[in-house]
Length: 201
Image 1 (cartoon, helix red, strand yellow):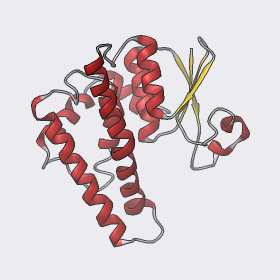
Image 2: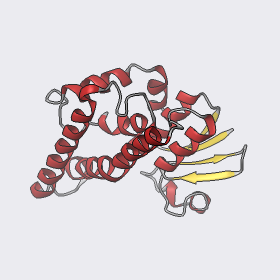
Image 3: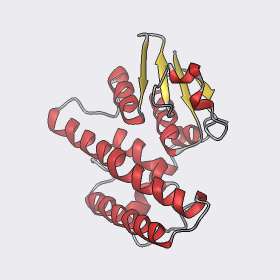
């Protein structure tokens, strides 16, 4: 059994989508980051960095934090969504790291400065919106001849989808990136993705 510590953020939803896709049973522990639940001693013992998501796997006794690490762990545990052949495997890992290092941080900063910052700073909004649109372009090009980011559906797609799903929240559109829009709409229809996006209820 997996214990999932999560909240309604793109990083949290990556893991709930993955758990739904691989059909592993799991218990949800809602960590309300708007109320500071992530700073309780109980959660800090699970993740010293006080960030969601995190999991505890009772089958192995392992605790894993950082969403990308969790996706790799679950992929290896189940043998799904991460190829075993070296070249294909590292292509998926490359694009997973692209999401972790570029998509998440840049989209997250745009969300913050556009929607949550107490003071609207035009320079910051313009900078992160421009970078977000550039990353849309990178993904659009990658998807120009593929159904999914690395050809087959993988943890690279699972990691990236919840962040792209925030485009309306960011006040943006996918209309100028038709390959990305097609990819988004394809993944949006997956039942496991729909279930995972609704966690925690």
